[in-house]
Length: 300
Image (cartoon, rainbow, N blue to C red; front, side, top):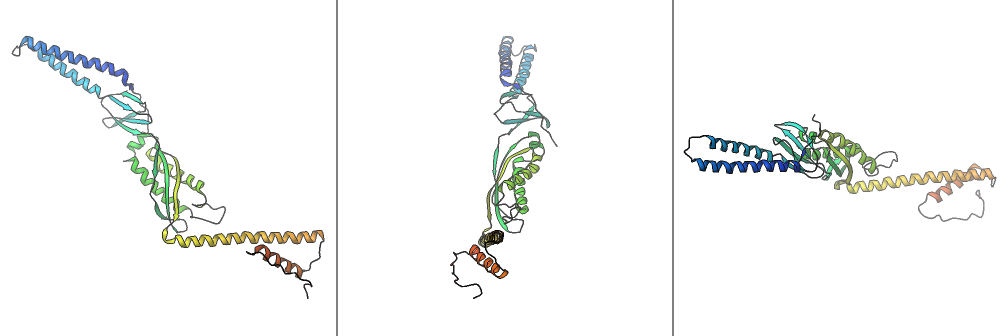
């Protein structure tokens, strides 16, 4: 596993005048060598002009190689420096830089990027087919890992993100009526946090940092959408009825306790049963109750 370390670079503005001076020297040497050859004649047996030309050519080659050490970096951009395939560090200073001309600088953006995944059709924890998609905000944190530990970190991020989204969808139900159970639709914050943690575990191997991950699309698959809608409605009705009955029973119990405590009226078991029945009908009924006034007694 590769690990990033910083490599300091020379400022290009400091090296530029030196290389320009060297370049001017080679040009002056060429002019002097040409004038020397013309003065002595081509057929002159002396080797001095040839040596001057050879020295000029060598110096010019060196200067041209030195020009190859310049490169520029924008803010939030890094350069991975390689020397004949060996990692020599990462440069991050923005502006014009100069390094060993034999270094190969591979530039990598450190800026935040968005990955908007396609709609994936998967099964939730209960086996229901659903459509799910997510938005992932990520950036390169370790340039060495991103360059050497994976073949293409962009492709790696796409593939691993899709795999993590599929795994997340299968770990939770689409919806639930239980308050303590986490669901994809009802617990967006918890699900998004779990997705970010899983993505970081997967993408950390490529030197990638996940800043944020959230679901961008969530729905039942079209073939079961109608049936699941009716199921949700039925579950909602049952849950609502359960709450109503629990509340009604509590109100009836409270009413009977107050009647006994305050000694307002003495009720036998039969009258209590009739009162409970009437109160439950009134409290649990969907429509307003139509009271019937009894002018007699319960036994006539």
